[in-house]
Image 1 (cartoon, rainbow over the protein chains, first blue to last red):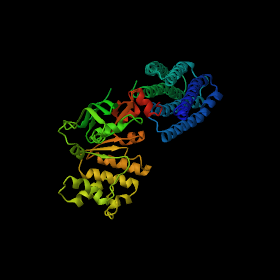
Image 2: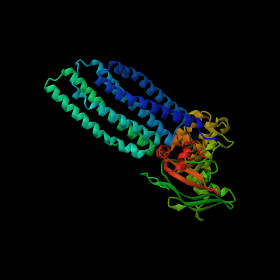
Image 3: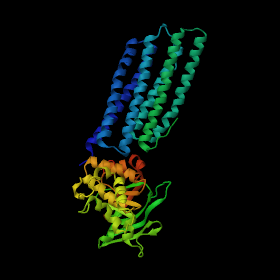
Image 4: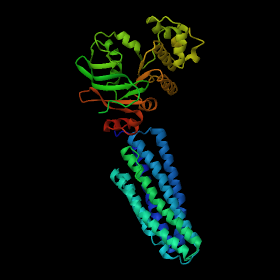
Amino acid sequence: MIVREHFDRDLRHLQDEILRMGSEVEENLVTAVDALRARDLKRSQRVIEADHWINQRQLTLNMEALTLIATQQPTAKDLRLIAAVMNIANELERIHDYAKGIGRISLMMNSDPIPPELMAEFPEMAAKTGSMLHRALDAFINRDDALARAIPAEDDIVDELFNKALKKMTEAFMHNLTSYEDINRLGWANHNLERSADRVGNICEWVGYMITGKFEEYM
Amino acid sequence: MTNTVHSNGHIAIQANNMHVYYGNFRAVKDITLQFPSHQISALIGPSGCGKSTVLRSFNRMNDLVATARVEGEVLYHNHNIYDASVDPVEVRRHIGMVFQKPNPFPKSIYENVAWGARVNGFKGNMDDLVESALRQAALWDEVKDKLDQSGYSLSGGQQQRLCIARTIAVKPEIILMDEPTSALDPVATLKIEELIQELKKSYTIIIVTHNMQQAARASDYTAFFNMDEDRAGYLEEYNETNELFTNPKNELTEQYITGRFG
């Protein structure tokens, strides 16, 4: 007999759900930026609508995790996995809020066309953050402590792009290139992308804790 | 292997390279363990791993088994309690024991508590001693109006608290508990666990439990024992309970506490 077969199956289910949720978040972050730049309001709308699903996933995952704590008395690795799942689900939900925010911004933009150079850094920021997230979840599934530890340093690249975009927005504002409101909105989109990468760093820290039993701040 | 835990206080009792034999069979091998004062330490492990044998070695209860033999030393106040000069009865006065099944004497509640003190020639006010012991055992309010009734008239949980009061009444320094709640229902179990938390202010407590959640809930330190291929019990890991249950160092401990053992 395999001991605790049902419990193991429930734990696998939690991890599968994190992967599902994570890939949706990764995809929607990139989509939100694409739709903003392409002025594809339908796609922006879809990212906004997907947020409800993500919120539901987060809630369900947390409830399932709490049920396992209440009914299975998890300890050691099992307990740390459950703690990681709950926290990663919360971080993913927040990252998706940022994607949704970019969707909202897209719907609110007045200018047509928006000066493209103001959004020139966004695709790379989204792609970089998406890639970090993807590998953070690889580290989660493969129990790869070294990978989890290595990823957060890449946040520097996103920060650099953030500063570059911010500088352009400041200049655009000074030279009246486009409306103040729109520059402000793009500033928020820039902020959302920068914060998303930070939250991937948080995910990495929980992955590290899950594997080693020690919580360390990587950033 | 970790067998020394860091605590600010001093050590109440310690085993150094202790082996216990029953005849030719070595039941427990090479135990080195320190128990901090005024802390609750739990001994856990699979059936037959020797945790009860280890517990009983700490107040020479194994002397009552004709074939039992202890090697190594058990230090209590820097004295080896197995020295030839040591009187085991005196050891048990300082290091009391509470058993798995409540075992009150067929006497009144009052006499159950007074008995040990009387045997030890207690000269003070017996009423005060009985009340104080019953209060410490969180039983006073339930029995104060029927002290002359038989100990057997109490519920299982109350009987166990009566046995704890009886142990306390001889003013020991250390209380050993051998699965003290395994015969009790969940509510009575939690009452005993609460009581143990109170008692640690005055006593050092070492508890053997089959119930891992009990060790996790109720103890400060946990020692995990396992059995070798020769069926001798040994200490696999010893650490602060919080650490042992969230981040055990040894794979076998991990398997045992996560329920994937064997």
